[in-house]
Length: 432
Ligand SMILES: Cc1cc2nc3c(=O)[nH]c(=O)nc-3n(C[C@H](O)[C@H](O)[C@H](O)COP(=O)(O)OP(=O)(O)OC[C@H]3O[C@@H](n4cnc5c(N)ncnc54)[C@H](O)[C@@H]3O)c2cc1C
Image 1 (cartoon, rainbow, N blue to C red):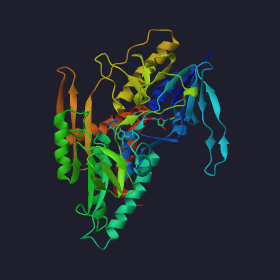
Image 2: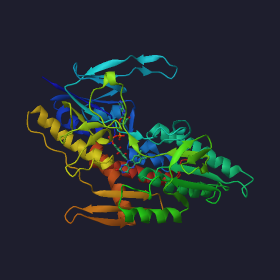
Image 3: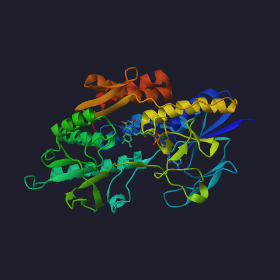
Image 4: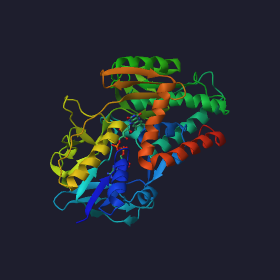
């Protein structure tokens, strides 16, 4: 009987998996592959902070699920999964609602033989009062675009202000992980760029960018020397860094620290920690951890159901060395590849293989200013610090590799060409 494979979530892991399975099984009609997502388009998440400040045009960098599904022999289904019925082997999709509140498609269920959950994660606001209401998040394309509008309006206000000698403004970013660090550098770049485009009052001595980290250093997940190098570079370009600073409250205009200090800010971004989606218990009975990630075995099958896999940020996968796989794009990519082979094995009743996480290192792009990172040498087990042109190229390559896995090398080549042309004919910054 034709196997029905459903993948929920078309992100870094899910879309790569749907593409591979479509090309392998869907094309020969050996299985029916369905990708479910509540968005129509895919934008690679590590690009979102660039979209948020306007240094990247999302138009050239988004993939339509409908068109991609047609080209790669799978089906796309628009919808938000709100639960799973493991007895009936169905997923439950919420109703699709129009802007005026009318129902376009009612709540429905989809049958599966094999299910892959790849729904990613969101920033964790740790229930800090006021954060959900007053802080901005950059977890998806809509939030990134919403932030851009607010940032642009603030920049416009500053540039029109006649009291430049007295007034100062601040954009505060909470969370000194990769997202917060890269966003702060992009914001400094945005100030420079828009100043060049005629926003005369907009200068770094008028608008400050503040990065707040609860731990003793920014980039806590990366080696100390990278963290120190990045810290120095950020200070050089004007970012104020507050380490050992925990935010306990937030209101419309400021953040309150545990020590009772107030950090006044016109715009606040929360990019601290991650958590997965929490489903209602009556609709979801898989094992999860304290941040709602789904527990998986080394084969990436969920602990309670071998027909359900979980990959990427939403999966909690314990490695043999006692460390959990970090929520990163390279892990989502590797998990997609492993799940692809394991689904083929499951269909053929063969033994499934264990997922092995290979950390190839991390790269931090400080916009036009610098790229710094490390490369893991798996032979000597050493971490090699890289920066400058090599690091920049390696950073660009990460995204291009994701594109190649979706579109193949020829189409990706044309995409690179089109980006190059766009850089010549369009302004470098989004200006509306
Ligand atoms: C601003 C930013 C910068 C980052 N930079 C880096 C970086 O430089 N390097 C790095 O390695 N990692 C980076 N990351 C992390 C990286 O993006 C994630 O680890 C990676 O995208 C996880 O892939 P995923 O497939 O698990 O989920 P995602 O890529 O998040 O995709 C999840 C998909 O599921 C869909 N979805 C969610 N819930 C549902 C539902 N209930 N029903 C249907 N669909 C659903 C979403 O619409 C989305 O398309 C960054 C993250 C952010 C936010």
